[in-house]
Image 1 (cartoon, rainbow, N blue to C red):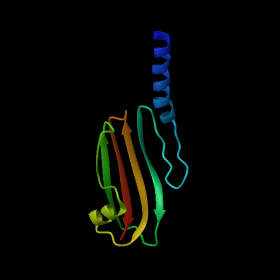
Image 2: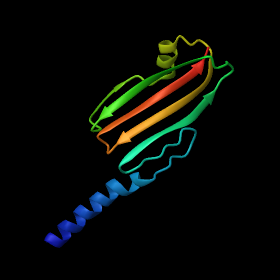
Image 3: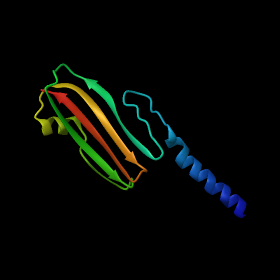
Length: 109
């Protein structure tokens, strides 16, 4: 009985941890996940404007239980007084799943 229970615990841990060790999503906004720490920036949409101003909007999560913030392009544009977008980048940080944040960085005029 205890051997079966141990195998069930091991399987549950493996299913939870292993996919996050280097997962790459497909599509326009791919992401990476490091087991201990993730911190990177990635490019996004490109618009017709020129880049003279920059602003960011962020959302964060604690323990994956509490999450708040507005990381939208609209919020970043408002924060920097940007009316015409040149390009949008994203910044992602995750520390042991305890703290995570994602920021949208808008460059434009």
